[in-house]
Image 1 (tube, each protein chain N blue to C red):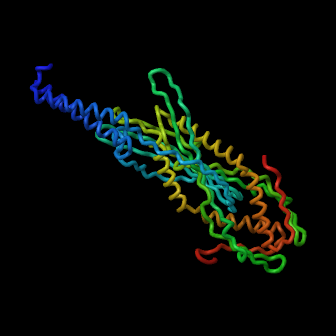
Image 2: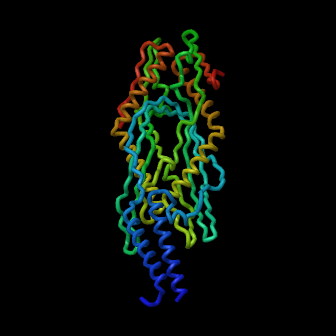
Image 3: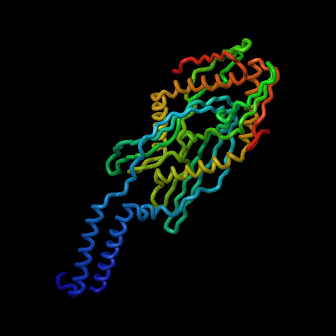
Length: 197
Length: 201
């Protein structure tokens, strides 16, 4: 071997070997980047929200990763519970007007989505396949795809009639409670955007 | 001999490139090698959202508990010749407590002139929320199946609920509910307001 290569080639190979050894040492010395987990932030906070409607929705989350060296495909069945209603913190003193002893007018805040919940037990992996040259879907990737599904459900639910139903139910609820309390005439209205309706 | 020399040079150069790339990937300046084989940007396909059920509810949310928790499965030993597993993730979410007002009946509200007595059901945990966007994988070793990961996520939800209970979410929820309703009834003109809330279990 000593005489197999001409001296310049031997020199080049020796330099390359030295470089490889040096880089190998650097590789071993550099630790993998680890983001420090955030500190636990536990907080209790007061709420004053009245949820009046609950929607249960489902969505198929599907992803195809097509490449010349092989494909990866995955399919999930997901479900979410969405609750909407009114935030009573937005109810001001002037929003309740008494008219004598047995008549009242209540102006409620506009309804909004109060809660969005995608429970893990309601999710199912239906299909998962990767080509021989492709790595399997990691847990992190699956979470990423499900997060996209979550985002899509949030966007689409906002365009459903959930807020109209929440308003209708809130009106019925408040009217019935006030009547139980002895008010003969009850009027429930909703605040308009930037005013009242 | 020249051919062998060229192959040796090529192999050495490839090794140099690989060894130059790897530390940069380790410190996060370049994507990791497995990530290169996973493909580019991920975007799910367009599918509809289908309504399965619509329910009329009457739930009063009076307390929320935000939590962040680092969940470590520990080393999960697997049979010989397969890599041991470990998953560490950060879960972020909230626990919501309050009252289910659909349990109120005619007898729950007693009015006498300017006095009112309201009997509420006990405050309880209404929802534990950790959505997919609330999970962040920190370390993933070995092949963790979706079902295994689901079990760990469900366990994280149980931990959130336990932490919230330990922090006194039900006691605070009952107190906030009492204050909120008292204010509401006083605005309705009642001078004496009595809110009765049984202790939560």
